[in-house]
Image (tube, rainbow, N blue to C red):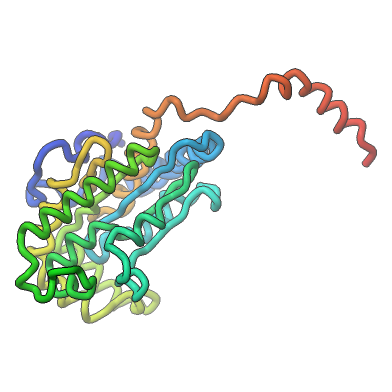
Length: 294
């Protein structure tokens, strides 16, 4: 099995999604990929314990991808060995009435992970420059001043929104949030096959919606919007990674590997030392406990 080339997935310069592969098996069998993921996620779980004890950083993992890209199963498998108190997953759906009474980033800001914890956004603040860009009529529901009709939403509006997102990520990164953004890059053909499996498997039927097919008709527009969003917002403090997603097991291994290798670079994240006075009296405390009558 070849080790994932992290820099090969990281977006350093402008990319074209059509040039990025949607499939990569890492030269491994399913069994080898499973074993690699098990080892990697165990190390990630140990890192999270240290992160929690250190208490000065948080980690935000943002997952984007078309329907059936494998976001839910990736979350389940990659974070399986985490202490439940150490990771919080948020799946952002259509904004609620309360959320629409605030600016579009508000619901994401209040869901950010506390210091010492991982937060996973299943769909993210980028929906506001993806779905809304494909369907600009959704913007009207935000009740933004001077936006009364779709024709009021011009390029300047989107330019400002990208700047706001970049500022949001710059702000949280400067205050101790380590940001990862993953685009699960799925081929149109693989999506077709996965939608067919949803229809064929009774236990998967509930995931299917006729709306999936309507959105699929807009595939090219979505790819265009994803590409623009990635190119305009991949920054050193909040990088994008384009992960081939046709092979689910490999995609999980790649994401886990990127998280582990990048987080290892934060050498200041260490478990805190005991107070000197407590250290001096460890033997006394041990003796005290051992003398207790059961």
